[in-house]
Length: 84
Image (tube, rainbow, N blue to C red):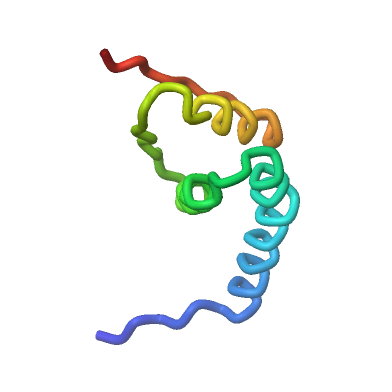
């Protein structure tokens, strides 16, 4: 059984999409939320992977604001749970 290699055109298109997301969405978020690069990068990974991201942290650390900013840049929706 052999694994099929992805088409080089598909790889190029995926790289272009990832670069566009970084430039148009993630980098501006990093400017708005200084010091939150790791969380923003993880949001980018979850966005590209089509998976959820659970962000846990103390109150007042811009978790919800970052997600709202991401949703606004993508014209998307978001939801959050308050775990008490």
